[in-house]
Length: 112
Length: 116
Image (cartoon, rainbow over the protein chains, first blue to last red):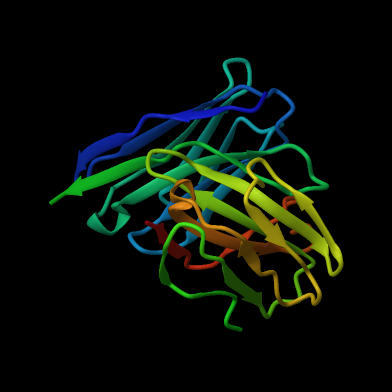
């Protein structure tokens, strides 16, 4: 079955790097995503990675995918207070449904 | 474009009451879906639609009905609200594959529902 797991909380100091981790169980995932949710708001797509890639970099964001261990990580360089939010990893497999399976979210707290 | 809009933002219901959560998108997206978000859990798919007149069940459909009479609107109906339906509800839409090959889903701001 589908299962996506994340740690619940991460606290970092402003300027440090943040690494948010995610594990998934279904090896047939085609795309893996990172979404950001700010307080009281909907989810915003941050970045994605296709399952045949190992790494993707997008400005301050680096996504690493280890397919063997079914492990996905999101690294935020030079973390800012504006990065404080909940970060969800998600996977999609059934492209017909376009449904996403989400992890429980990691709350990132950035201390000044 | 307004994107995906949801109304109301907040709602309190008594057990047994019915109501409809509204969702609309102005991007001409064919795919729309409803998720619920509970504390400490990720979003779970309730129902989805791949086009006007076509709907199907997601992971947690019990207690909810949907219909899709137009491309723009995808309302979610609670026929007899229960405290277990207290949650934040998100509507999302997506269209054709992006140049990156994936479907980007656009989320509305959510409706926070409390059932007492």
